[in-house]
Image (cartoon, rainbow, N blue to C red; front, side):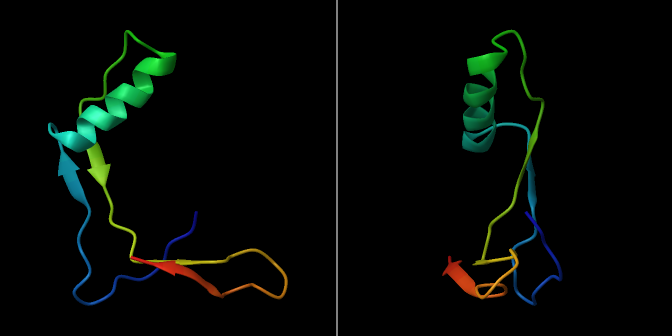
Length: 65
């Protein structure tokens, strides 16, 4: 994963201490560590995904939100 720059009008990452983001994170964590819980999660909305590998597809847009 790589990231750079902040676009004008892009969503700022949200810090959540309850709600669906925390519930989903804790469900996944409990699969391997049932006695542990996250206190919070950071939710980031991905706007665009680009190929960052070497080769002919480097830099090409893969998908948008």
